[in-house]
Image 1 (cartoon, rainbow, N blue to C red):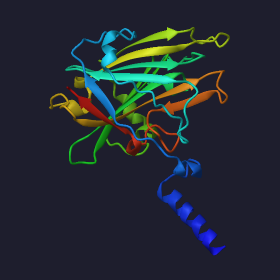
Image 2: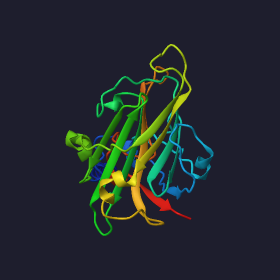
Image 3: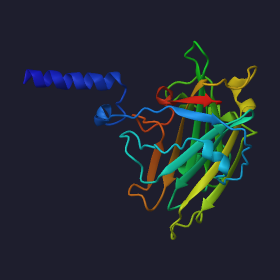
Image 4: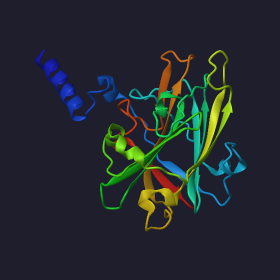
Length: 261
């Protein structure tokens, strides 16, 4: 009996140390996959039209989206790809979606209350723990929430709306809908987004050159899917295996490696 009590106390102590009080205890014991995302260099110009052209064949498919905090496979599948050149980092995402929904039209509004694709990109200066990151949340209507958090930390950007005052005016994207928006009476197929984020728009790139070959940043990609076809009406998923239902936990972002050859 004493041995059993000591075991339970040890488990509870571990939960407190890991900061998992917001999620179920069982999430501590989930085998969470680790992933390094490689972004290949392209010499072929990317046309931002929302169409997956041949140039994207050089990109490594990213399909391992997971539902937090239990790292389950989502019901709505997503595939992403990324490339870079001397101007920008590019993303192409196709999200399966039976019920396309988006109503927010004001910039920096809560686009996460709609079907939305999210892009988190972070940078830590060599030899420091000073993580900075940008996040872009773009709904199926094309409404953009963009923010820059210069101090990192678990949830700081999410908790303080001052960071959304930053705007990435030179961002380019195009959306292609494979279905009808805001009509839940029919069954849609999904939507695609092609996105370009110029390097010269990134705050930490001021005064420095392009990423070097094998340079490491940090990232994760995510989405919200609202649907009458989902058992809980909404499904969140991310490429990062978060142990809480939160996308701003910077210590759980994933490595992003720039490859030039």
